[in-house]
Length: 434
Image (cartoon, rainbow, N blue to C red; front, side):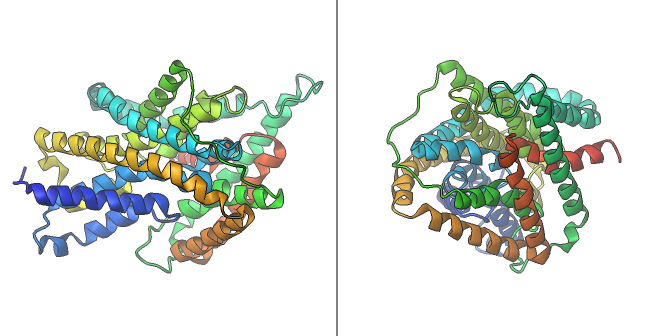
């Protein structure tokens, strides 16, 4: 490991933290945007004495900080990223109950707890994937098909007195339809991804932003506008869940996020999906709270273990890790280098946790002062504009189509989770070699 300047190291940590705050709070700006920009600027920065190790630290702290703060626009603005898309509905429910601050506190606690748990999982997962990676990879198609079957068969729809025992199959048919429609949209989108033509060339080029913004964000905003949703007064305070549910939420999320970080083509959105299946949505008090804990654990653990996967199996599993690999050869890292990175992650996680809690007190107060209809319309227009800027005309077509499909679960009375077919169906076809 090269000689380290403490001043440059601290400056790099703070720079990455500030970039993470910006990307986390700004809809449409992903941590990958900054990561790839930093990687491209590495030769220029090195001319000013900012070596590769400091660029890696900036990228790493940016990605960790981002996972703490990106829940805020998802909950209050309905502007999700793939990693937080499934959190929109539970977080939105809590906000409409006047518990927006509680939702943010839950998320911050889930992210912070996942860092500690990930360090516990570090050694066993290292040996698991070192010896069984090829076997797990070969069975990914079967694993994903099993996940889909569980999704469909656990769908029970809306409980109505006297509807009969076979009514559940009507809802499962709706679920299959939502899965199929979103899956076909995903297949068409990925096959034609070269048609994505960003107006702003520095923005991340991907079909995921228009797809997930439409399916999980804009569709919810349209429904809020149509139903004249208003924001009630927001309560102050923390959260109260039984200890075993807190432990289950953060452990399940952390473990899922950690495992998925090693798997090719499988994003943390799929780990989030696993967490959603395990927690019965809306059928039990505290399910929304537990899921927010879980999803936050998924995303933060995934960001940490993406680094470990890069080091152990020498394969980048995120845009940030692709950028890091472009800056430095991870095979040259020593155990001391990894230990330094883990210490930095702990420090920036503490700082990000405090920042998220403070913003959790401030944002609900600001939101209450603005007409929610105006907020919804403004964010809807902003999302459409960001889609055009980052994806061009093709992205806008995907966005509008995704909105239509994303509204179906609400009217059909089934879980929005089935719209994850947009990722699952293309992945299943890929892994079974179709």
